[in-house]
Length: 74
Image (cartoon, one colour):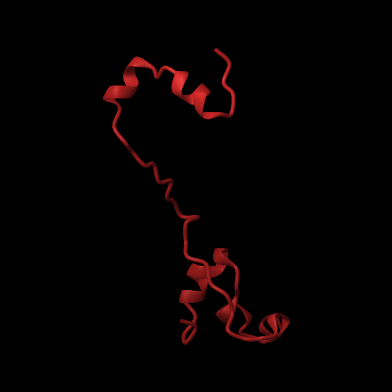
């Protein structure tokens, strides 16, 4: 039977045998790339990159760990 986007088609659909014994699960893919993101507190974004300490308030998540090493940045 071909699926159609309506309630009758869904009601006619037979689920596979394994469906009744299946358990609900969630897979979370977590790694080094899963660091929290943040944004600078200044209104003018380019202003943050002009300073000598430009990575203290860098809005890019890749620099999160490096930013934590800068005193006063968190």
